[in-house]
Image (tube, rainbow, N blue to C red; front, side, top):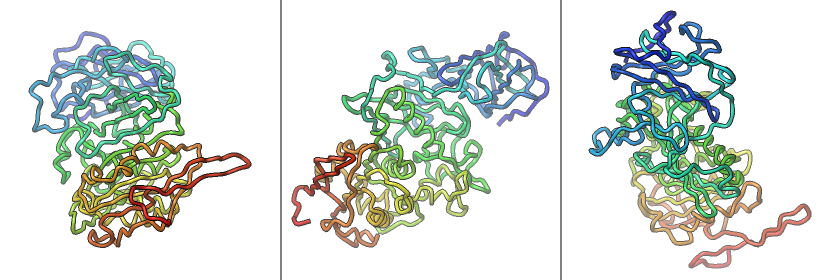
Length: 506
């Protein structure tokens, strides 16, 4: 790739007409805690890289300017979310027509042949500031200062209808709906969130999500794809051999735009950070109840629900996880040779031979270990409702019993149903188990609830071998409560145990 090096002197183009080859016509707009920088491009090499700079005074060279972002490719205003080749280069859409990102509510897309960078305002760029775009020996800079301020970042509405107004979902519950490993491609979304430097390998990365407004619940359906400028050919999973990869709803190697085969594997939970930022925005702007945030998903989405709930228990009231991974190991079993740790290695690097660490030094496998997280929890964790199949070829059964045991011993609120089914086993679950999807809304962060453990009705999940234990079973199935009175002077609750076919006493 053509790398940009710090040059003391470059040609200043500013808003002058674009050269025969190069960049020109820089524009910058500040709103909602971000600065949207655009520019024109002409005949740039496809492997050219562009950098963005900032200074408090007019920028005549980049020697003393602050670097905000680099490794931006030509045509960065193109909305790659609309191009199926971003996710599978071998399956282009014959009807695809390039379009640009939308950077302001209810406006037209940018020209996809131009450049875009979105900077999130920080202490250094707050107030009057100048910005510049550099490529090769060319520099274009804003001639007038851009007045920006630090404030809550708002995603950009991309729907065809008028943008939702503030507090339009006042008091409603909010549910994050997280898709599985095969999702996150070309989708009918209605918001784009431009990330800051803590939420991606560089700032300005674009993430799409959809908001569905229900009568009582607002669903946020984000897409887990990150544009990284290259195909991750070193990944053992061919689904990562594209420009926009999955992160397992977690994060990835901090050097992913170059390679994941790094001597030292440092991982940041970038994806979790931007998802939580969207959650904060929804609670504040849409007006959803912050005490009633919920999680649900299947497979990778169920795994992420477990991770989010246990790593950020103060943010979520309850969750429903279908066929999730609880613990990431290099062990398979008789019904599955799929190694769960390999799911993280795709975006993190060769974790089997080199210990991957979070930016704070914690082992990545420990950070993502649900069994350890629930066993060592210092406070109440969100009630977890889950399903698993003993013959799930994608999610090995052997990692499940350890989590069940830890949750029960920790006396955290937890219920699970399992059968001898495969990855789609939830569809064969009893109706009362499927109803957990709505049962989670009974919980709230500002309300007390009973946590059940050691029920005499619990079944035998065995020792981890898929053939050991009850082929169909559950923990805390049907345990519920009504008539809660929780006041300063009185606590009263009626406990219920009920499901079709239950045998009393319990």
